[in-house]
Image (cartoon, rainbow, N blue to C red):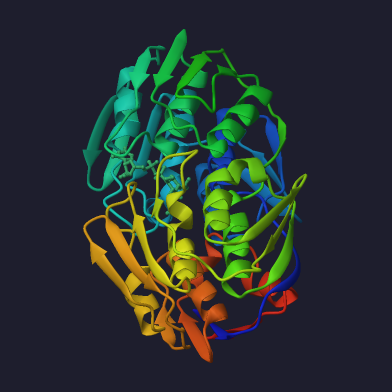
Length: 419
Ligand SMILES: CC(=O)N[C@H]1[C@@H](OP(=O)(O)OP(=O)(O)OC[C@H]2O[C@@H](n3ccc(=O)[nH]c3=O)[C@H](O)[C@@H]2O)O[C@H](CO)[C@@H](O)[C@@H]1O
Ligand SMILES: C=C(OP(=O)(O)O)C(=O)O
């Protein structure tokens, strides 16, 4: 386990290039199970989650090879049972279930893992599989889904907090090979769903409406191999933009898709951060004193829950009161107590965090509890006076490619040391 050691107080300057999106590439890798033909996926980020997903696919019988940022997956033959411990390691592993069910009419996987940010049930995934004709049972920590055949139907995927991103991905994948037409209502609209639908269509699927709450999938007999380039990671983009603002710096972000990030950019501007869009590039600079803002996380195109912790780190620096309300995951505030170690003044009240910003932060040892909490601690450490040690950075390596290298290239004084 590594630790990140940060000497804070250095404004970030320079250029950074955004990697492929973790939350797009993982379901896309699972989708390659839908065909025996080879699939080529480009712009694949080097992340531990990608490594785990590759291990899961290999265990299922696929041949997986990575060269640079190009991944080749050939699932000529696959088995229908996911490795218990591998699947438990990450949330997106549940996405093998839809493709296995579609291809083999049988799938058995353990309940998935992922960031500990709430209960994270999979009832909506299972409801979708059942609607398509599968019989679903849970037994000994495994979920089993079996069907004689899958038949298209209308499926409502709305839940307590809106729709479900991976649930939409899973049901959409299962429906590609179902008989007839499936209509997913209250589908997730996230760009990662659009990216997956584009990949599936390149494989021969017939999907329309991805990106809207109604997705229509006309089942086909079989899918073939395809090539695809993954979209840029909007959460990585948000993280670097927020880090630049927090350190009073000025950076150019290359290779992002600013159109996927309107809610974050809008809030940053409201907080006094200057954002200039030049095609796919973003220039982020903090020229003025930060202002407090209120933020509520919502499904896309609202403010993403995956950028909430990072935004909170920034708002601890804005003199005044900011209220951050988390509407997607009930316990996604693990970073609050660690930010307090750096001197932040944050109070929790139900789903809201009241950030009394403007107190100077000073470095301290802190513990990363989940992926985005870690990113928030790194941002706070970059802005704080003195040395911050972020322990358990394996969380951050799940979702940020070479974060210490990219930050060093922006002038940050950050080192990775073995714990
Ligand atoms: C790998 C990946 O892409 N992860 C993302 C995905 O997670 P993930 O797809 O797991 O998150 P969901 O969109 O499913 O969760 C949204 C809400 O729905 C609830 N829910 C979900 C499924 C279900 O069957 N029943 C149910 O009640 C969840 O508890 C949560 O309150 O979307 C989240 C919301 O944008 C992001 O934070 C994660 O980074
Ligand atoms: C919560 C996240 O990931 P996962 O769903 O894989 O746990 C995230 O990417 O912020």
